[in-house]
Amino acid sequence: MNESSLSLVIPAYNESEGVAQTAAAVRTLLEYLTKKHTVEVIFVNDGSKDDTRERLEAEFKDDARVKVVSHAVNQGLGAAIRTGLKASTGDIVITTDFDGTYPLNTVPQILGRLQVDGSDIVTASPYHPNGRVEGVPPYRLMFSFGASLLYRMLVKWNIYCWTALYRAYRRPVIERITFESNDFLAGTELLVKALRAGYKVTEFPTTLHVRTYGQSSMRVMKVTMAHLQFQWRLLKQSILHNDPGLQVPQIKKSEPNAVANNIT
Image: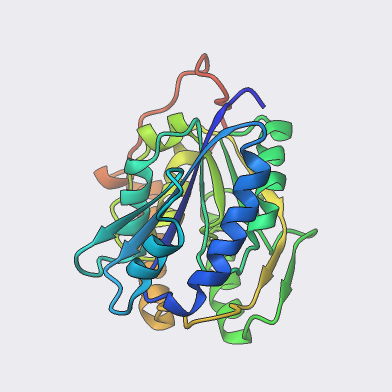
């Protein structure tokens, strides 16, 4: 790959139980990636009430490639992503879950997909025809799959999954595209706006695993309502064009790695 520096952003909230397991996976990944790239890992401790921060700092106290950034109080997943993106310096930035739902050993594959596709964003997609889901409760699937289906109809049909945190971004995207949400809607908002700006988005068909440790902080009803409200905004914007928060400047066709997607 032409890009020589990588940033891995991993939000964490009350993840003390899984710190040792995630730390081991990060060390293995770093050993592999640093053969070809300069790599930094940014854990964003989002105001955890347990000892997540202390455990992470102890695990990586002697590794300058890893830093732990903390919020004094819990602000939400979107706020944690925003903090991590702002702290990142890599040519490519990867965001992913702390809990192992998408194994870290697939990071080289999503990076390869970014290169092969010539994309600006590659997003994990268990709902792609070549993707899979293992052990995830049906109610979670119904929410996520249903939300993604509506986004497919409203924004771009051949993107199958809109709710995954696990993504690879080229730096121009995260420097140009902003998002308002501080919660679980943030990743979807960023993806929608990037597509509307004309960035090329492709998918990495992969397997979504059930969380192997800890408990999810997501509240399904609250997240569902946030997505429905955002989808209603998208529908109104497509008809009335009266929502400044959804208006994004189009990229120039001469920009590197930028391909127009003809979003309506």
